[in-house]
Image 1: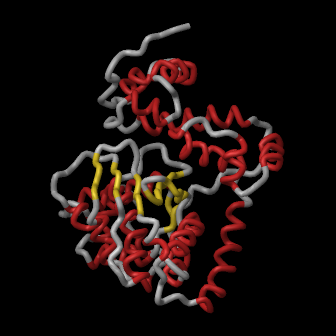
Image 2: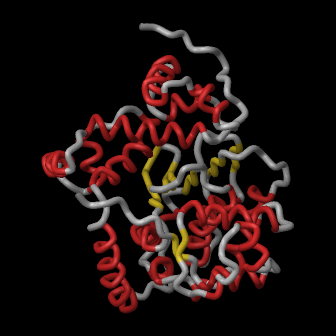
Image 3: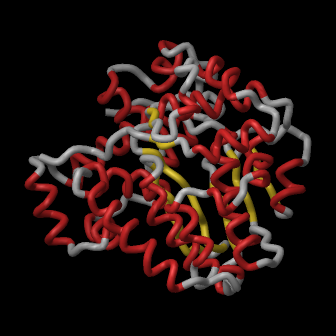
Length: 348
């Protein structure tokens, strides 16, 4: 059986250059994150998702800035981006650039960008294969600001999202509204960037098909090698986790998202000695634990995000998984906010 994508996050040298230029000493950040003191000197350095999150948390804790992630993106030199990101700036238009960035992002981190057309616009969300806790707020800012900067720098025109949803509470400083120039909804159930579809059709004056003809095959080959080591079960669960809130996804929906036929997906799931139903349960359990680890998320809200029609169904399922209620699980983890808005009614 193949294995899940390796838990390896690359830290490009450009990251440390921006960090130093903005006045954040790498040694102090690494010490705060409890990472090797010379990590920034190794251009081939890789860390786990847990260490990667710790690094971002350290930057946030040491920075005397209400939104250091946005400042980091603004201070980054496009030419110094790694090839997986640089290729997006030579795309045909904003839409093409976003798709290239989403496609090749996993070459840098075990993360998946999901871009979907919806009534409110083009919704961009992010999911991590190996995360055991919520993504740091600064990392979310870096991702969303990078996508907006792709549009602004690529088109050479002002690009403003329609809306930004952020899980964190409102810091009250107005920095995000000033940068994104759109409505910011704090305390949202998920982090999401909503773009205007008309902006995605804006051309990139710097479009370079000759350079893309060189970069794309090399990036595609590297991605193919990475995907051969990814189990289909892991890919299915990733699709399920981002689709649960909109209802219970069917096998056909997941197959379409993964770019294969329903019969092929069913065969590959069987080859890994599991079932679609088992993967759905695992996805709900893993995502449930991840959401509950954030004490700001109400338990009833977690039930909704997992696709349950009522909180009681979620409570029963969670007790089957963990042997305790969601609130008791939070208490054992030392997390606040153990109670939901109203106690569930247990039925049998």
